[in-house]
Amino acid sequence: MFLISVEWQDEDKSRARFQLPGREEWRAEHIDALMSVLAQIREEMSPPVAQEPPQLQEAQALHDPRYRTTLHEFSGGTLLSFRHPSLGWLPFLLPSQQRIRIAQSFEQQEAAWREIHLVQPEKRGP
Image 1: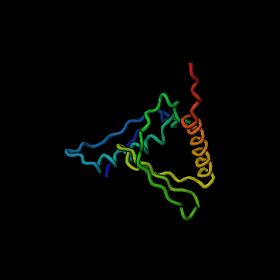
Image 2 (image 1 turned 180 degrees about the vertical axis):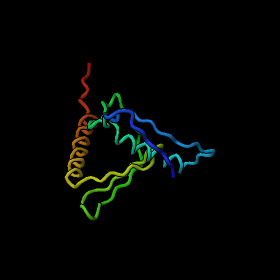
Image 3 (image 1 turned 90 degrees about the horizontal axis):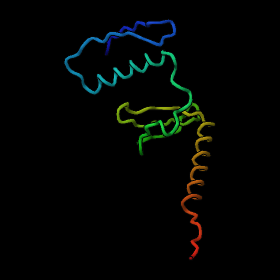
Image 4 (image 1 turned 120 degrees about the vertical axis):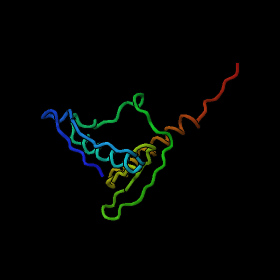
């Protein structure tokens, strides 16, 4: 949909120059295609996207995102997609071992939540 030429400005691919021919009209599908191309360019750049997520205080988390999950029939893993309001549906394929780890993590978090909020300390009178 786009004819974008990318020119790397250095060997490390930390800077890029690209040309995007102008359009008179931009619709949602044009923006989606452009974001896809830009994501491919970012994937090649350095430094790479951090392996670890930012600290929770630094992150701008989406509250209560829509998601869909299904068993991946060929690998036995889980196909998990989250809906981001501006980036669209982001699909991830989790190997079965990762699914087990995530399920265990959720169970531990649920147990911690119950301990914090459901077990009320006894009130003592004056």
